[in-house]
Image 1 (tube, rainbow, N blue to C red):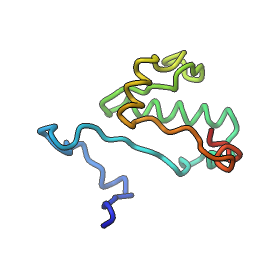
Image 2: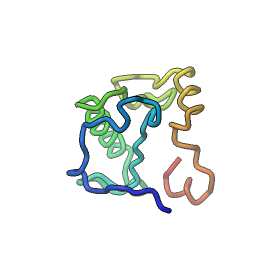
Image 3: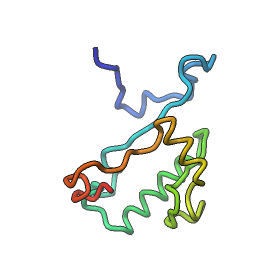
Image 4: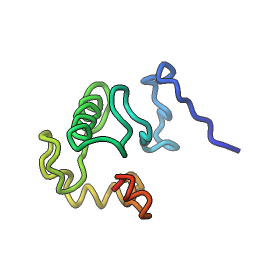
Length: 113
């Protein structure tokens, strides 16, 4: 069957998914739609992408546990110039927690890489 999903932000909570930590070790969030007030990624300017990054990094620092890690060598976010370390990138890639590189010309031409 299909994994259940919930798209209503009002239904999100701070309760722990698995308090024991035995079954749910981590969770990821992938955003594929635009944020209110911003165009979809394929139409965004560089300045708009930087503003989206600022908004999301700010949201990640308010109430969410964890750290915003820009891609390695990134110079776009002043909170962590140079991005994550090679060790952090290797660890996250090994855990399947990094976006994969675009794998088609269509994705690249759409600005997703």
